[in-house]
Each structure stands twice: as C-alpha cells, then as structure tokens.
Length: 108
Length: 118
Image 1 (spheres, rainbow over the protein chains, first blue to last red):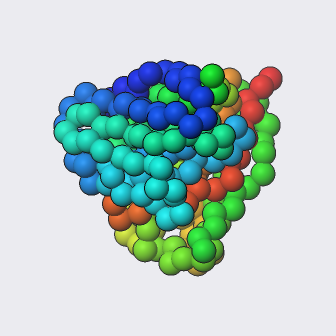
Image 2 (tube, one colour; image 1 turned 90 degrees about the vertical axis):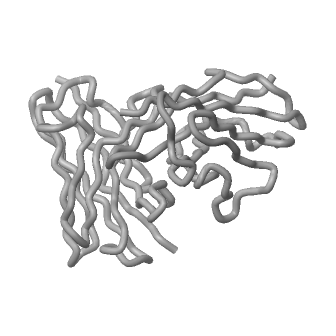
C-alpha cells in the first residue's frame, strides 16, 4: 500500500502570504490519480485539485497543484481568511485509496 | 447537482454492529462507484472500501476486511456500509463519497457520527 507523507504537519502563515504544502509518496503515483482536499471543522472534505494539477469546479485560481512521481505540491498563491483549514492529499492505485495525514494551515 | 444524504447519528455498544445508509440523487447512481471514508475525532481520513453498483464489485481496505460490508440498492440509489464487532476505536464520523472516473472523491455526504460506548 502506498503511504502518503504530508509536510509540514502545521503551517502558520498570514493572509496574503503564499502557502506551499507537500505530499510525498512511498512509491511512484500516477499523476492522474493524485487529488487534494480542503476540510474545515465540522464539514466534509471538499475537492480542490484532481489529476495532480486540475482545479475542481468553482475552485479559485489561487489554488494550484503540481508534481509527478513521488513528489506533489499544493500551492495557495495569496492566502485568504477562508483558506485556513486542513488539507489532505489522496492517491489511488491497485484498487486502494490512501490519504495523507493532512497539513493544518493556521493563521499566524 | 449530485447530493448524498446519509442516515443519522448512532450510539452503539461494543461488540455490536452499525449500518449507515447513503442515498444519492441528481446523478446516475450506477455509473459511479461509492466509497466509504471515516474520520476519528481529531484524526485524518481513512478509506474503508467501495462499491461499483453497476457491476456489484466491492473492494475493502485491508484494515477492515472481515468486519465491513458494503452493498447498494440500485432501485433506491442507496449505498450501505455495515461495520461489525464495534469497539471504542470505531467512534468516528463516517462519510460516503462518490468516486469519479479519475478516482477522486467529488461529492461527499454530510457524515454520520457513530459513537461506540458501553
């Protein structure tokens, strides 16, 4: 089973700053099957990015995804107050889905 | 617009079973797979298994093999997840999610809190 390691565990930034979140896989992942989600307290996760770099419907263009192989990145270009949340990466392979443990993005 | 509506919160005794439902609307139920994902308090997301209603194919995460059963009723566009031999560590919010053809979760249910307590 592929393990996804997200870093950092917690990221403290201010509104307007740039956020860079990392997701590293224990073995190579198809970019087609790499996604990112945002989750706020008390809510279900929301799809942000699929196929490593494609934004989901309605997602602002300040969110972008990149990467391939074992290293993937979610970038938020200029943080808005509503962006402070927990972010998860997710992959699919061999009929199994796995999630990273998440990065908590908090206000500095 | 696709909507997934789950059944309500449950409180269960250790050793018992729980069955959670997930009713889909706004899309073609059989055309997609439905996965179940759980989240223990303060923890991350954990995939449990999925069903592809069109073919009746089911896959389970190894961690839950033998304890979880996922099925679906195409006539009512409803998926079900039953977890048996409950223990306190199974206390969590259980989500159903629609899986796109690119294997990401594009629509989620509102979550069902299952509390296991004696």
